[in-house]
Image (cartoon, rainbow, N blue to C red):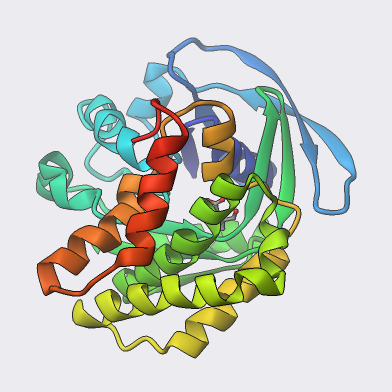
Length: 300
Ligand code: PAF
């Protein structure tokens, strides 16, 4: 399988490294320059390995079997409009981003004949520079079809993920999993960014009450959308992710520290919007949203 990863951020580089020996993988940054470099990959135990970093040309996109899009939620639309005119109709597109509410506005994707998937991950990763990525947290990869399922593609993908030892599942109801992941991001991302702390700090008891209040709002909104989530189950999931990614600096904390746009609009912002729709108050999510916005003019 020829797989092109769009986006050379922390998650794009992590999947590149994990897939490197298991399929023909290429990466694309903002250019179409056919270049190559090297990537230092620090594994979860702190051991570093050097691999070749091969970039995709426009021709590579044209004959790709799969595009794995690892760009921020607010960049998906532009990235999709750049690749749709190039790819063949059999090329599967996998979207990997935090937050919800992205696909709803992508008419080009809804109309395309391509198999479209969502990928959710709780793996922790840190990009130290353009040629150095650290695997900072063991986590799951969950993939589910959104439009035009392709069973052969899924079987092939599964073989590759198995051989790369990437802990994963291909699920029927990706929407439910997205809400799960949203709940995790609603807690970890803003709290680590506001307090400028690593994920693991959130296990301290002074955060317990706040985490519970944030999650209670997410559960109420998620359940109004047809889920049947229980607060205690979500609390345990969030705690598990906090522990498994303890060393990680969340993507939102990294964005704030580097004065980049955050995904707050698609994370807590999405819960607030849905809350308004169902007349469910979301004051804790609203507070986090305002605090993140106040942290920098570049954040949305
Ligand atoms: O956005 C992130 O940083 C990640 O989704 C997660 C799982 C919270 C780990 O830091």
